Length: 338
Image (cartoon, rainbow, N blue to C red; front, side):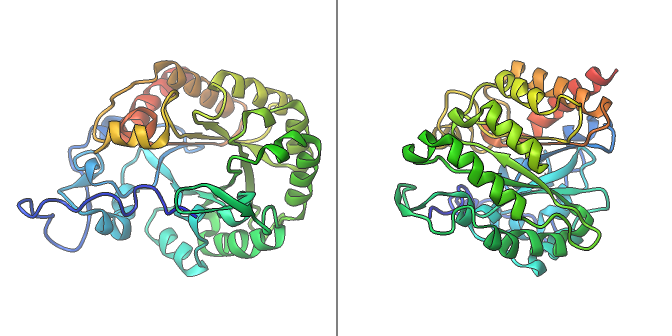
């Protein structure tokens, strides 16, 4: 299985530029994000991960190497009023323990909520090599017992009230599985039905994200409605434009119920690695996607007015800098709410 993109690939700062002194990472005192409009508590915006040295001045005060931000940057990130969620992407590559989840929860204030990605061990139909090529079938694909043990229980026990959507991002599927859509949808239904519906006083919110556009069908949406699972709007080159996904979501939400979960992952027309190379160090907007931003703002405002909660996370590969994407999105949401 390939390792987490970006976690170990960013070089340390050159020796001639010293990292910020001290052991603590502080939030930027003059960040443009501090000028963001105040949104309702039910609308949470955040980024995919938080440990990017290029966010100096946007999120962090001073220069810090990526390992330091990974370990100590979350508390500073969560002090930015605009940022009230973050996607725990590392959990896709390997499960983490209850203790690790609890450490994350202790670093953020009340009201902050994590979007947690389910591990690939249950979301990928194949076992992949270091280059990401599928080699053999994955015997644990859509195994609810493993999902409960490795994700749901430790996540809810560790994060408690700070657990937001648990997103099952189904990796690109082999052609044979896609061609048997009816069987796959039934398998997904059995999987979600077998997951825990509550743990103590906590009720997990499950969401499904796709990487095969062919699966975005009325059959799938009816199934999700029947098992109480949200469709996660995943903006990625493999998936249709946000307009089509909004239409599909509307079919699921005929009664205007259900929370809105969006992951703004990648600028259309780019592969992940190409976007990464184009946008690093992620400190400015390079390719603004004005239309997507406008539609997301409209969707967020509509969901809030219908009494639903909203989670939108943005990736640096969407426009060049996730914090700046969210700053502009917050402005448009505020305008749409008015």
